[in-house]
Image 1: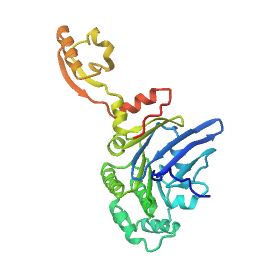
Image 2 (image 1 turned 90 degrees about the vertical axis):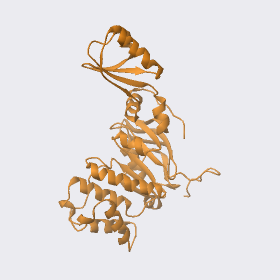
Image 3 (image 1 turned 180 degrees about the vertical axis):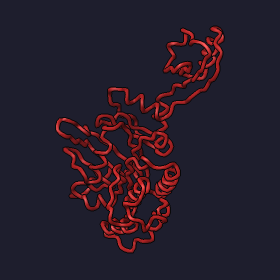
Image 4 (image 1 turned 30 degrees about the horizontal axis):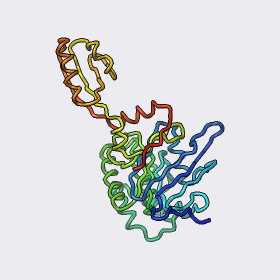
Length: 316
């Protein structure tokens, strides 16, 4: 069967998902979701545990079959054109899966062989260098630390130079130094034209790296937009105030949270800061500490996950 053609004048999507549903008994892990990731994007796929992220990735990678709907990688159907679809995709899984009988270099050579690649040692050496694995190249996999094993998983996903790379929690349990080195390498791949899809619970990573983000909840897409527009959707400013006395009753409606003498007040615009300060002066409250905080992706994520209805969002 041929691949679904892109509309006239529109580039084939790196990943295109249409009405994808996956059920486990009475539970809908994915509920008729549709997504389009363009070539060259750095795309974030976020959601709490159980939202359906890993199920979606498993379907793309051929590890699970959807009950209905379609998924394509660069125009190749992941079911009917699975061989070509697999070659176009590199996946870094959450789980630390490895063969304990081989060294790091042997593992990567075998992975190359799965894709029919010969004479791939130069690229293997480059990948190991960027992931700081060169010093462990001849070490047995079972002798590596958890962080080193995760580096090998990343190297395995990259060994056949796939144009589309899916990273499922790639920095979970990884030290700060590796995290920085990994993102530098992934940015280079993205700059070179590789499409990156990232799932992570480190929302500051997603905010810094991803141009667009989809948020999943209970198998449905509840937000889909550029990172900037998602954050700007929640335009409130927060004033963190530590006071030497109780918060005046007039400011209680603004209160977002309170821990001891630390009060977080919601402010719609900067002009309202002076109003808050005037109330505090009139009440005789002394400000011990004050900070104005802009909303970030974590705040947006929390607010969206609190909602109960799906919203399609606007495309970039």
